[in-house]
Image (tube, rainbow, N blue to C red; front, side, top):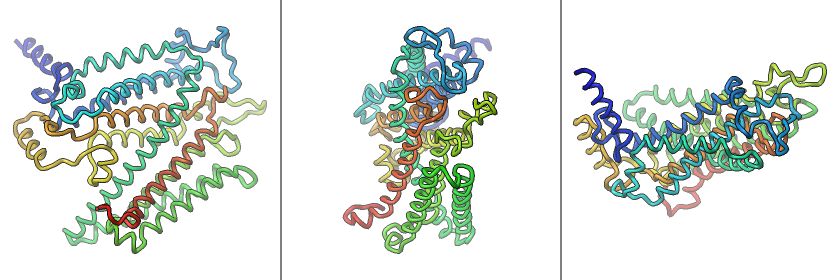
Length: 450
């Protein structure tokens, strides 16, 4: 009897994976909005691809991939002789990451095109968006298997440039999310301070603002110490100095009286968050400089002039890459779980705020103990744009895991100046975007920026 009940329970849960509208009538799923469950499941597919990519970077797995036809052979079917310090097994791991991330990007790109102009859950395509998860998983597995049989040829070089563009755009999306997060944080704590009439909330804002600026100053000092030399590394000095100057400028603009009048919630907390993130992007860019004198993350040379193979792992699993991966995970969850409190950000990110009707529907659903469809009258986020963000996320994590290694530019296992300039330009574009959010209400007075 117990076995029968267990089998029935499993079949009930399986309907969540194979049904056309999962988690609406399914008791095994939590009481939440259907749109949130869908985004979380798609994000879990992305994280699954990231996990597989990380596993493929381990030396033990790399040795098993020698059986594939594109491994360590050129067009003449001769072993590849690397000019750099690492053996072919290390290069193999990053080729595998390229193909795994290609599979996830292709998977989300298909749904991005397929879900264009879906307006509500009444659209037949919405059932595919919100259901049939088992078959979606099979499709992802099939694309992944096919990706591993793509001939090497020019694929890594071409896909590298796709990754550069996608990662550049995703860095800007991360900055938008940080700006929105800082604005919401500052606004809520100011409201708490006014409601409770307590100086503790103001003290909290001051503490975190001071902490972020302190960390930024420490980051600048450490970058000058470890990534520059008195007679070399002139590019690094220029990048650090320029970004420091730009951050000081936007911090001053954020507290100008006219800007404060146009945006009362604008302040130094947002500027400090953007400054700290800009310092991180600068640090990440300097960690890709292909110069031994200016980049402590590169392997050190021994007495014979060769790179010490024992230190080769620091090229790939350095601190900037780990921090970047953590930020990537947090921002991807942020995209999946919430909408912004600001109408302009929702318009830019193609999401909508939760209205009164949806809130009432949520209360009824929670009291009934089941998930509910909150998109009958209109979708709460753009299906197509959400998948576009996941395509960019796939490309960004590919570049992060491979440390922006370019297989087409050089055989050496180090990054090139391409990645440095892309990250620096992304930091400049992000600072300009934040500056625009400050001065736009002053320049476009006819528009509502509240």
